[in-house]
Image (tube, rainbow, N blue to C red; front, top):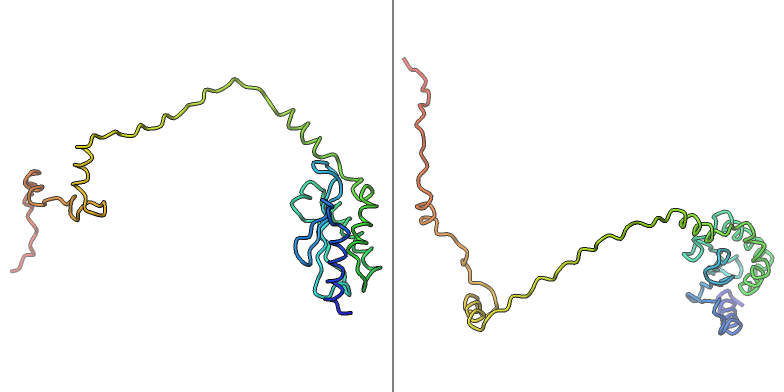
Length: 199
């Protein structure tokens, strides 16, 4: 059988075995995840197995760098990937995703034994930092009241705009002559410009 046929067969087997199992997730036709432990536990983690084009002739890619695993220490992630890769060496050429998931399920406690109870410690540290202060008055912004216009005022505003609701061109232009006549003339002092002496 070719690698593609083996992958298709294993995909069907995995979907039938893990049907209804909330810990198993198929992200795509070649990426599968399995969650070990309960949510919100400091030692729960998610193992992701990705098949390459030549899987099962070659090992799948084991990934622990998922958002769910953000609380797991990097050394523990590396250890899990190393152990799973070593186990995968034995099964080259055969379907191994189910076997790897079950292997990790058996060894899960052992693999994360060095993981501290980080969630509890972080909570304790954050509780020490909490201080109670006087309640501050919250300034509430009053919404600006909408201006209520009479029918005559609305009509007058509509008369100032054209059919598209825009003011006509030049509505804000300034009459230059009128403007200058209001400001007055600017006095310019005569300064003599030195002329070159020609003799």
